[in-house]
Length: 304
Image (tube, rainbow, N blue to C red; front, side, top):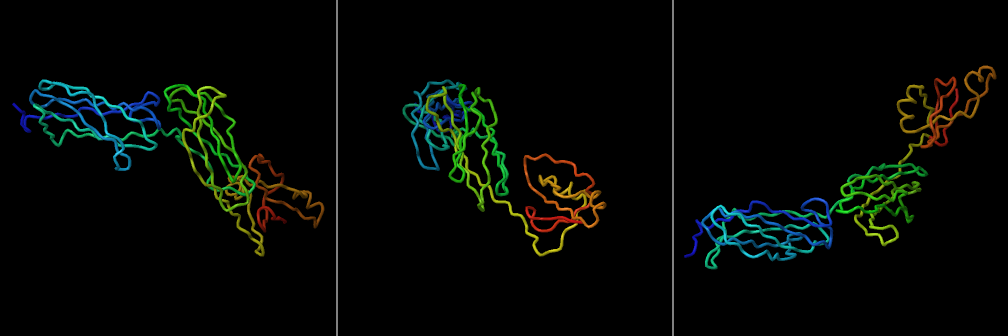
């Protein structure tokens, strides 16, 4: 005797996916064999429960899942069903439907459908870099990389900036789920903007071919310096220099007599220039209290 639709009820208790190569659930690398597990409870009359499923990429059918054989379950009984598929080159969606049948007749209640998204691992957790830089400035791009493989692997980062190949000095062996920092450095060219493309690489043994794990794109724009040619000199105080210019790594380089010496020399002039040198440590300026600045920061002069 067939079970009626009112009596045939199969409820999905849990739907999950895992890969032997990736850390965590619902995550897999391209080409991995993904194991889909569905736990189904019989909330109706005794009967046969089964599962069918599909895998979709961008709402298009990618694969049909062949789950393990149907199970005979008593009321309130629980069945476990599994199927495998190969992970595509982008995130995908798994849709599973549980059914309750007897005598080859199926009843598909609306509450027995479940779905989940399986993600490609994103090893780059965070990237720190300046959005703008002056021409000639040293730029550092810092990558926070997490090893999402289930085994220890050597990891590094390379990049391409303005036709120049960059390699991180760090080649580290990371434990599963371990995070570390990798830097790429370059000098900002005389361009409006620079496009950056970087890659995360891994291998099991140094000397063997590297496997590309993730790609990252970015852009650094040229930082413009406002010109002040033809305008009257600006008067800045030591406090203004400390609040506005010094935090941006501008340094005051004295290349002429100090204020004390100038008093002794009469009409002698003090020449000073703001020079932006990122690696240069600030130095105290003896006797400097007020400075007039005109022109661009690289060509400005100051006098009193």
